Length: 398
Ligand code: NZQ
Ligand code: ZN
Image (tube, rainbow, N blue to C red):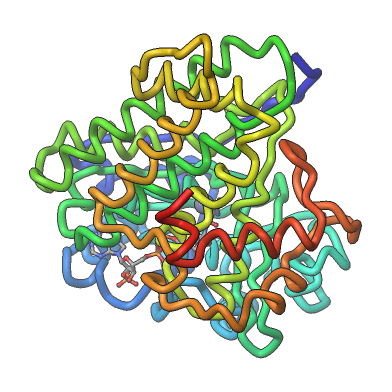
């Protein structure tokens, strides 16, 4: 196991009725003037925004509002939010909704105390040195943004979808009431399940030895995601199923599963290019990328994939031919994604073969090197080959 620092500074309030505590918790964390930031209207339709307004009013905390966050949140609205915070002397930002609203709130929170252009942080041209406190009221189990130190913003003018990691964007508190996820369309629920699984997989697929504890924690979270992800499709208003999914999403990405091990994140980088070019949902993009990534890396990592297959999907270990076990596990993932009605090919996603070279050239390699990821270090040619595996003819025949 590798050395590590672990900080998960977020205060969580989980369960029914917790959204009524926004005022109390904002006060506890010294917020006096709040920006409420949300998306295209789901929080208005399901009544969450009204409950939050009442809760702040009860504590005599004033607030301003900025809605309109799009899925794959845009830099343009972040600039607007930063201006609003400066003009209204906001000292606390709350994102209400899914990962997009929360990520946009995080970008505003660090941008509001910065004299330069907030996009510098996402280009890694500058590092945040402070930020307004940011909090989250979550309505979609997916990204783990409610407990993560990351935010992902799309800059459509530049054709870039880039992420920032900073200790200043851990939410100070996050409120998670699973009841608010009942209204999710099944497509968004499924995208969330794939995203949560991928957050565990990007940590599970490692070369670090002797990490049995985190291996087994990862396997437990993956099993629970597959079990509850299947159930939620038939029974979307089952509180306990939604509750297990919601907490799994937080655990999948607050790094409790990733400490002490080298993590990969190549699949996420490849997916972000798909979202940037085609504006597809992050989870749907991952359902296409992950099978191709697993197939490409299988040969050099047979035993890791065989362990995954055996422990997560209960596939019998073929000791004479572990590659067969490993392959069966990858196929089980593909079948699971299909059972959720997720796309698994480029064509189903609406992506185009002729864009593959451009996509492969654009994939962001942090630090500016030539090699992506750690599990299997990938050259640009490898990345292109992985995108090609996502084509219909390759994804279904291997
Ligand atoms: O905009 P509204 O009206 O709120 O509708 C949203 C949106 O259309 C809707 N929705 C959310 N909660 C709902 C609901 N509809 C009905 N009932 C509810 N309870 O769902 C749609 C998608 O929302 P969005 O926030 O975009 O989805 P998600 O939570 O999957 O967030 C995706 C974004 O997060 C980034 C992704 O790249 C993508 O940009 N990620 C952020 C991470 C992080 N900060 O740690 C890590 C992830 O890997 C990911 O990259
Ligand atoms: Zn993700």
